[in-house]
Length: 350
Image (cartoon, rainbow, N blue to C red; front, side, top):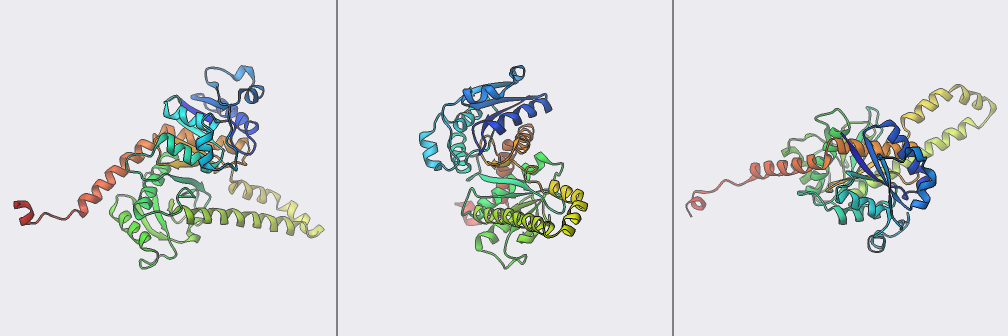
């Protein structure tokens, strides 16, 4: 199956210095992959080996760049020829099947939603990514696209997360947990409780409420929350990881004895670092759109950006947007039929 991706080559903290090497490595690894590098040609051309510019790789010119700290509304209004906007347009026009960008998250979400629109049955897109856990990767959403969400939105997030996980793993019935302040049914807001009822009525493999410590325990395959809570949880986790790494380095440097201990433990420490390496899990999906959009971390290197490209490829190969649309429509129809009030004799006769 031929897969064609549009790469926002100018996005991210490092721009073409990361995106171009990652694109070339991906082409060498995947013979069925075709890439469109979108950006300023005078910046991209010197980084490309002439022998690698072929029918599998082309440059699409874009004169503008969305800055990492630029307001999304301004980027949407004033940067219509940015590498980000042009790459998204390629997906809308059918020239590419997905876009990968390490650029400004807010601008990417706003522009993608404006250009591509949401799928039928989906009210709001959500940001979803894989996280390392004790039992292997799990997927969490929303991670910041929606500050407040209704019960219906949370249910839609669950469906989208399940379909994404089915696409990128071999799990056919991933479990779904709803992030809450406790596992008991009486806990949580009314929105959370209503979302739980919708999930219970659906054909999803709903586990129930999960708490914050369940995220990295791998209690469920998919963890659902609103964007405010999800983003706080993610950023807190990143902060804890940096703190642990800082303390470990400090302890191993305390004395010559601790330095020797550090050298002895070096293979274990390297294996630990590989297991939780954020580059391995790089590539957050903007789910719920009429097209595939994958967001790479802005500060990642070529290895991390390459993993974001791999995520986009899997979503294309499994046609994730179509499956999300079908699942949401079908599930809501079943819930509506199950909860519909039977007609009374008076209503039927009249």
